[in-house]
Structures are given as structure tokens and as C-alpha cells.
Length: 332
Ligand SMILES: NC(=O)c1ccc[n+]([C@@H]2O[C@H](COP(=O)([O-])OP(=O)(O)OC[C@H]3O[C@@H](n4cnc5c(N)ncnc54)[C@H](O)[C@@H]3O)[C@@H](O)[C@H]2O)c1
Image (cartoon, rainbow, N blue to C red; front, side, top):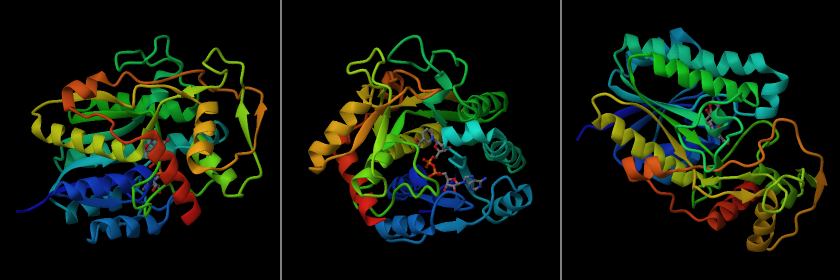
């Protein structure tokens, strides 16, 4: 039987590579476009190793309209696009906002134009819980308003969702909370070129000796232990949410919606460090520092919409996320 072609922009990245595996295992044919600006070829090799198959890969920048045109000419059976390609470092976006507007919004604009030209009508977009800013009600549901974004990165996600809303395409925006961990094999993972900005990769770097110590930014918040609270979603569960969204969009005549992808429970920074130490039998050196500008005190998801509508539930444990994150770091 002929497989359905799915274009995966940014497919060589952290979440993209995990999604390739799930797509292949469910009978889809993923096609990657990635400029390798924030990842490594090793991630594609790792995914190919897991699925025991080659994956079609185009290496170029998807803000390049001519190359995107050529790709859609060559691959003329694409049924849907999963759009991961973007820059994601929140702090860098504060220092270099233009880089984020150009890449994150620019790549989507080109993609939407080409999809229209080639009559490809289904897009799944990588959004983020940053679209909610600092929410008034917890857990935060999809009906919460977009409050002022805390960073240019968050602003690009808000603008991209609005752009997608305005075009005549089937669309699902997936608002990820905090992705963590790696595939069981630990052959794919986060290959970010820059220093990590996210808590678990930073803890792993301290554990592995790449950093001497780390800082907790503030322990005087109104949370369980004073440190910030987030919702950590295992990357394999997150990849499977893309599959659920893809099956749904291909079955739908008309759809425009967004889903939160989180476990629905908050965990504090201190709790993450304590749990990491316990399950990996390690000591992490850390200091308590001042609050960091732009940090939201507490955010976790209401995930009942995707539970009810797509029958997607997170099943992977936080323990597995922290163990695989640490193995990935050691193998890098
Ligand atoms: N990881 C997170 O914490 C998180 C949270 C919420 C949302 N997201 C979003 O999910 C998506 C994927 O994130 P990730 O963690 O896998 O990041 P990642 O950096 O590992 O993956 C993004 C991939 O896109 C590629 N890329 C970037 N710009 C490109 C361009 N113009 N043309 C071609 N390729 C390009 C990079 O090389 C990289 O492989 C991003 O849109 C990100 O904003 C990530």
C-alpha cells in the first residue's frame, strides 16, 4: 500500500526526530527539510537506526522560497506538513529579536504560500504554552486569552498561530508545555548547538561535569517550595500527540483548532532537581539566585480537550524522562 507523505520541517531536531519515528511506525512516509542550524545529522542517523529505514532528507533553509518550490515539485504527494522549524531559545530571543521574527515568522509565511500553491491543505504547527504569557487561571486551558508574551520568542508563537488562523487551511496548533527526555534507545535527542536553556538539559550538564554548578532563579515565589512550577511532558508522548493530531486532521473536512500538550500537573524546579538526584543516584551542585526577568511563576496545562477529542493521554513516566535525558547527555 502506498504510504502517505508528510513533510516535517525541522525534522532533524529534538521533537521532530522523535516524531519521525512515530510517523514511520504508523505507516506514514516522513520527508524532512532542515538546515541543521540547531541540530546534527546524527539525529537523522539515530532515527534511521531506530526504524531500520532511510528517511528522505532535504538540507536547506525553509525561508528559501525557491528551494521550497523545488521540494514541492519533486515531492508531489505531500498530504500534510508538520512545521517544527524555528529557533527556540527564549533568552536569545530577548537579545536578538529580529533573528526570531525573521526565522520563525518568515519560515511560516513561505510555507503557507507554497502550501496554497500546491494545494496542500493540512498543517500541524509547533506552538508553545508561552502563548498564554502568565495565565490568570490554572490549570490553563486552550480558551485562556493570549496575554502579553514574556519574550520575542513567545510573541512569534502568538503571531504564527494568528497567521495560521487567517488562512484557508486545516490547522492544528499544538501548544507544548516543557518537553523532556529521549527515546528509549537514546539514539535521538536534543542536539541544540547553543548552551541549553531548559532546566533538565542544564541539570544533565552539571551532572556530567560540563558545568560546575547551576542556579535556581528565585525561591520566593508563591509555589509549593518557592521555586517556579512547570508541566514536563515526555518527548515520546509529545511525538505521539503529533500522530494523533495528524490522524485527526487527515480525517477532518474542516478543522481549525489548538490543543495543550502537557501532563496536567505542575512540578517545581526544586522537585525536578531532587528527583533527578534520587533516580540517577547523583548529587547536583546548585545555588539559589535572584528571580530571572520574564519567568512565569507557575504554569501547567489543562489537557482534557485533547484527551476527549483525540483520545491522547500521556503515558510515559517522569522517571523515564529524567533517566533517558541523563543517558543522552552521557552518550553525546
Ligand atoms: N523544546 C521545547 O522546549 C519547545 C517548547 C515549546 C515549543 N517548541 C517548539 O517546537 C519546535 C521544535 O523544537 P525542538 O525542541 O525540536 O527544537 P530544535 O531546535 O531541536 O528543532 C528545530 C529544528 O528546526 C531546524 N530549523 C530551524 N530553523 C530552520 C529553517 N529556517 N529552515 C530549516 N530548518 C530550520 C533546526 O536545525 C532544528 O533541527 C520549535 O518550533 C519550538 O519553538 C519547543
